[in-house]
Image (tube, rainbow, N blue to C red; front, side, top):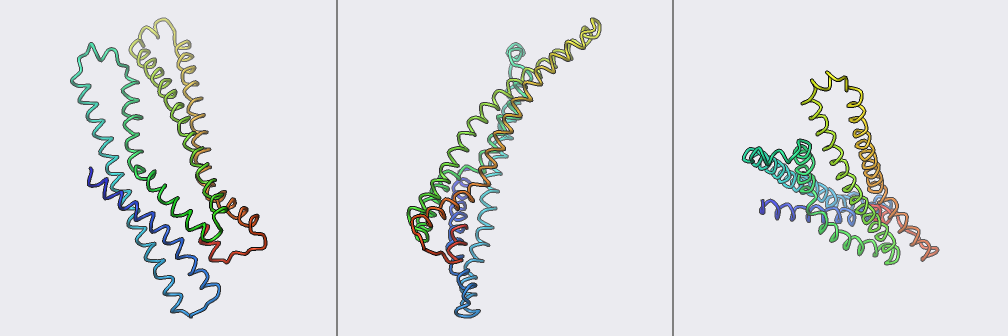
Length: 268
């Protein structure tokens, strides 16, 4: 596990480094396409490193993610096996204090979090390095003020998404509670189905299940709305950061112009 962790961290660093290199190499290549100076040889000299960085990014990204995803699978399966082994060794008197819904929630929700976490384990520190290097490269094109505006929008978006992540976590906890109550109630109804049929309690029992299910559905809806806002911010952050950088650049440097290569490199 530790070998895969360190190797994947190195691959993530190379992955982000190749992304930065592509953005930097795109500028002279696009400027050559615009001007055509130097002929095909100059274009090949500018385009070949760009292609090599793209191929390197392809392999580093996929191998790094595969190693971390494999660690997530193993962690989830290992925890599930440990949970089953613990349940088999636990006495019946102690199991009576634990509901079926609680055990199902542990397997389906808590163990799954390790599978979701591991592929993005290196993103916090690698993103910080990428942000610092990107700020310097952007500042060389549009200046430090415009670069600060664009990076500020990016950091603000990340902070908002982190806050929404905590809200989503609380909503998931409430959903798990409602799911536990619903599963426990349905289990009790199934165990006492003869009494329910004998006394014609079908309608009150269905109403009780429906009320709990409605509360569960409401929390799921709020959680999905929170996830939708987070996803929307994720996809529009690049456009908002680019707009902020351009607006600040043209406001602070009135009359200045950017080449096509500068624009493509900044967006990349």
